[in-house]
Every structure is written in C-alpha cells, then in structure tokens.
Amino acid sequence: MDQVEVFKALSNKTRLQILNWLKSPAANFPDQPNADFENVGVCVGQIQIKSGLSQSTISEYLSILQRAELINSTRVGQWTYYKRNEAGFEALGKLINQEL
Amino acid sequence: MDQVEVFKALSNKTRLQILNWLKSPAANFPDQPNADFENVGVCVGQIQIKSGLSQSTISEYLSILQRAELINSTRVGQWTYYKRNEAGFEALGKLINQEL
DNA sequence: TTGGCATATCGGGAAAAGTCGATATACATT
DNA sequence: AATGTATATCGACTTTTCCCGATATGCCAA
Image (cartoon, each protein chain N blue to C red):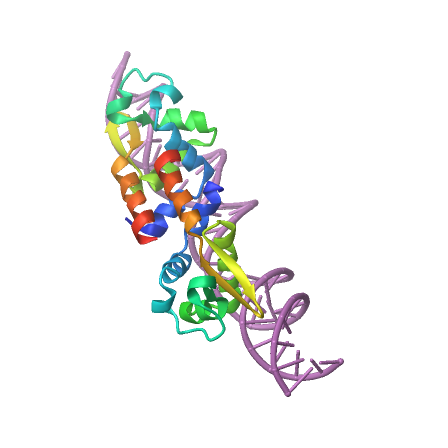
C-alpha cells in the first residue's frame, strides 16, 4: 500500500463521496436488474449519474481508487461493478495508527 | 477537520517524512540549545536542513500541515517550533474508521 | 456481422500543487 | 540604530490534478 498514492486518492471530494455511497449501495442507488449490490457492487454508469460528472472522469476516478486498493471491480458482461475493499480500509487504519 | 484538506496535506512524501521525524525529535534532530523537544518541538531550520528542500518550501509545508491540524507551532524568540498534534491524528483515525 | 450499449483510454485546457530564489518581517544583539 | 539570524510571504516556473469531449474497445443482441 503506497502511502502517498492512497492519500492522493482520498484528496478529492467526489472520490470521497463515491466511497461513502458504496457503503450502502441499496440506499444510494436504484436497483440493478442484472446484478446484486452485495456481491459485486455498483456499476460505473450509476455512479456517474449520481456524481453528475462525465463518464470519462468517473471511470478514471474509479481506477484511481482501485489502484489505491480502496475498491475493487468485477466485470460482468458489459458492466464493471465496483465495491469497497474493506481490507484496504483496515490497512489504512493501521497505517494511520502505526506508521504515521 | 476538513477531510480533503487533511488528505491533501498527507499526499506528499516530504510532509509524511516530517510527521514521522517529529515522532522522535531527539532521535532525528541534533540537540537544540534554546528549547526542549518535548515542550515545543523542532524549529523550522532543523527540519529544513534534514529535508534538503528550500527554506521557503519547508515553511509552506509546515503551514499546510498546521492548517490540516496535524501539527502545531510555538513561537519562541526568532524561532518557530513545530510538534505533532496528537489530537489531530486521533481525529483522523476516527474519520477513517467512522466516516470514510 | 452489424449496431448498440457500457466502459476505458486518449488528448487537451484550466486550475492547483511543488518548488525555487528573492524579499519582507520579526526578533535579538551589539 | 544597525546588523544578523529565523521564518514567512511573494512571484515565477514546472509538474500534476481536474475535468471534459472524442474515440477506442469489448460485449451483447438482432
């Protein structure tokens, strides 16, 4: 876990919002017919609509969060679903408590 | 505590190093004749020398860290001493565990 | 196999951050 | 008062980040 990379990923209001939305997909997004929130997460398009930013921006933001190990993705057909990587958040907590 | 501001402050290798050095001033800096590490911290000049960056850069970095509530300063004569603000780190830990 | 979606990648323009040297300010000493 | 030292601020330049629209890629359905 690269410290600077993870903090950079967190240094943006929209990316923080996305992480927060992904805590309760069912509360924050409309139902997805093709997949289940608990298993795979939320698809890019839903996140993009909710954010109000462009498709390309959100796609990039998601990959920044993924490189920082804060989310991970599952491809199902033409959709990519993203969900929180709780192990990454635990690692971050430890980093703060022990290394910073 | 502004979330984006804190994470931006942490998104820089040198600033992370400074925070780390300030965990054990006595181990990381030469003795200061005019002040005591435990009470007031380390003066700007010592941090600047150790970092290898310019005086102006370090002065700015310290103020970024201070605005993020991760360190605080004490002015004594012509010196400004900076030390870690452990309350800020606790707040950060809570932020990670509860809000992120 | 062609057309239509969903997502990723590319190229770019604007804004912010990184970093410097020069200058200003504040305090201390003589 | 004049000089010296420590820190802060300013102006500038370079690099990175923020976002976008356009295009490419991958997958599905007709």
